Structures are given as structure tokens and as C-alpha cells.
Length: 272
Ligand SMILES: NC(=O)c1ccc[n+]([C@@H]2O[C@H](COP(=O)([O-])OP(=O)(O)OC[C@H]3O[C@@H](n4cnc5c(N)ncnc54)[C@H](OP(=O)(O)O)[C@@H]3O)[C@@H](O)[C@H]2O)c1
Image 1: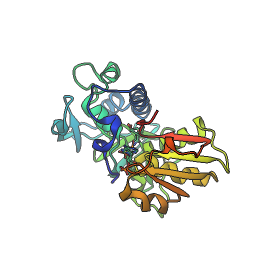
Image 2 (image 1 turned 30 degrees about the horizontal axis):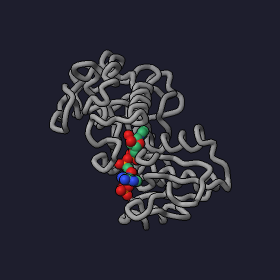
Image 3 (image 1 turned 120 degrees about the vertical axis):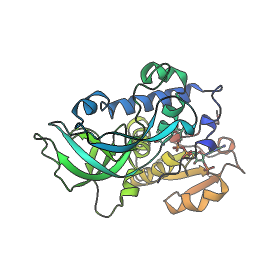
């Protein structure tokens, strides 16, 4: 399971001091979730009457004690959907935002007073159990991973053309379930926004976190010279995943050094 260390993240401490960056990240996260969603109405309408499954649900915003393990209707795949038995799911800051209902702006989409969609979680890995009649890319027994709202459950249904792909055989369900949101965030930041190029000097602030660990490896795969910023206890780990240089933020402020970078991916947002 991916470590959910929100309590360590300055962006996520308290609710009063939301930066514009944190709000936009949460909105991006909400949009990502809605793009991986769509299971609110269609899944319920297609749920087989009487078949139940266990799921983590929440009926109000708040602290983790709002999370309940309940029996809910097990979904049935529509013609273009696959039914996946979830073998592993991971938790992201995104899920924390939905649970808390913060920043409050996101409630415009998620539900003003209480969550419209009571299901939680997005990242999953599992095994295809059934497919709709139009599905061509997957068959029962295939191991897959992807993103779909409501992944903290025994089953999810996903349209075959949405965020789901075959799981490589050498990757465990737990490893695969940690990939989708965090790795896509890192990839979009470095490749799509940062236009990363071979040989560039790239700095990853928050290199030891969910997004940062993918960012270090993705930047290396693009042929960049990578500097990772993290705390003392994570220096060796960040080196071990490929960082050429590491900066211990408890001892050094990277913005004060003479070193210049072509691309900075800032997962922390604590330096001007
Ligand atoms: N995870 C996702 O899929 C995702 C998607 C979209 C947006 N986001 C946003 O991206 C941000 C990071 O998410 P994450 O999942 O990577 O969080 P995370 O796993 O909690 O990682 C936080 C990172 O920040 C570092 N850090 C903490 N305090 C620091 C400081 N004072 N100076 C420099 N670095 C510091 C931590 O280093 P140490 O652990 O070594 O202290 C760690 O590398 C969050 O704001 C989140 O909302 C995340």
C-alpha cells in the first residue's frame, strides 16, 4: 500500500491556509476523479438485485471515523464495461480531500452538505471477473490496474476505454495499485507541463513522497540529471531509485544554493 503521509505535507496541514496551488491541485484531483468516475448512476442502475459486496463508504465529510465498511450492491458490467475483483487499492491525498470535503470549493462538485457519491478511493489493481458484450481488449481472468472512483471495495466496473490496462506479470497487485494517480501526476508534470528533455537538470521537491518517487524514476528514464529533495531518513531511498544528487531539506534550502535547474517539479510548495 502506498504510504499516505498527508500529515507531513505542509499543503495539507490545517484548512485555513490553502494556497492557490493546493486548491488547484485539489480541483485537478477532483476533475481526475470525475474523469475516472461515472460509476455513481450507471453502476447502481446496473447492479444485480440482491448481490452484495463490501465497500468503504462515507455519508458525511470529516475525519477518518466517517468511513464505514458496509454491504452495498455489487455492480454488473454494462456492454462496454468490465467487472474487476479488486485485489489491492491505494490511498492518495485525493481521497483525503474527498473525505474531508476540502478545500470547500470542491464541494460544488462533490456535494455541498454531504458527499453525492458515497464511494471512496480511485487506484486499484485486480482481476477481471466478467465483461460486457462489446468488450474486446479484456477477458475474464486478466489481471489489470487503473483508476476508478469507488476502488475501496470488493468490485469496481470500468469502461474498457477508460483508465484501465493489463497488469505486467512481474508487478504485484499491491505495486500496481500504487501507480495510477501518483505516477500520472508525475508524468503530466514532467513530460506534459515541464517538457522534460534528455540532459536537463531537474529538481524534484518532495522526492520521497507518492508523486516524488515516481517523478525521480520518470525523470531518469527521460535521461535527465535528477536532484531529489527530502528529509534525512529518506536520502538513501531517493538515491536508490535513481537520483544523481540529493538535498536534505532539514539541513539545506535548495533555493539558496548557486545551482540552477531547467525544470523544478514542486510537490511541496513551501519555497517561493
Ligand atoms: N499522490 C497523488 O497522487 C497526488 C496527485 C495530485 C496531487 N497531489 C498533491 O501533491 C502533493 C504531494 O503529494 P504526495 O502524495 O507526493 O505527498 P506525500 O507522499 O505526503 O509526500 C510529501 C513529500 O514532501 C516532502 N516534504 C515534507 N515536508 C517538507 C519540507 N518542509 N520541505 C521539503 N519537502 C518536504 C516529504 O519528504 P519526507 O517524507 O522525506 O519528509 C515527501 O517527499 C500534495 O499536495 C498532493 O495533494 C498528489
